[in-house]
Length: 317
Ligand code: DGY
Image 1 (cartoon, rainbow, N blue to C red):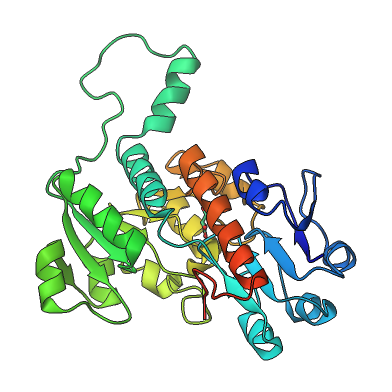
Image 2 (cartoon, helix red, strand yellow):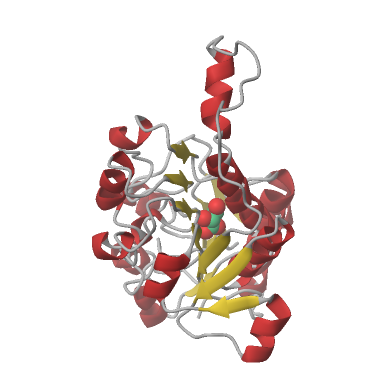
């Protein structure tokens, strides 16, 4: 019987769909080492992985029966795609179904930073609330402000829609601009990256991490942002030069940041934790019950399709 190795427990609803196979799940609450994955998945034909598993060429080449790597995430920068391709191993991800949850979280970070929600919550808990004051926790109004979206794909478009409902003007930067008809339908305007950085009051990142987007917001690009601007990152930490970002936030060269992702996850630099103008989340973009269940089902359907000799639903190449 074909074996499926799952590197970390995913929702039962997905695992149940795979029950006709021999499914081995790592039940421990930790990321497995490379050696452990190779040992435990040795005879597996399918490998279910998380975005925190670094599935490199060494792992892929050490698993002789492997047919599919089903990543429980939309991003797949944790997998060596070239090595998988070279070995004929299919790689799948979980697009579409997490779009709304991820866009909601980007919006939540945008609102939380604009209105200083976390700072204000801490203030109340510390017993510092003495009564209403005209200038207590003044934030930034969203209505009439410009949101610059970098990466207007599925999630970027869903964020645009939400931001427009708050009265924001949306500009975007993409590798390939949309057609003018699409721009009209979505009510968005294209800008070069430099122009977007100069013009935006809020910037939200929605690009995958690739060799082209690594440190896309480098020190010199961050310098172009307005000192009053806010950066939201729910994509991947390494899209931004984190060290430069910390410096800019410390020096007030950027007003605030809402971060769900970090350059070396799960490590979060101490300097970031010390800043009041930053909202920090533990990579929970897709973390709703509905979405995580749907992701588990899609992962299972991809595995089933490949093990039954059919085409996967959401291959990445
Ligand atoms: C993904 O699926 O890539 C997201 O980062 C999860 O939150």
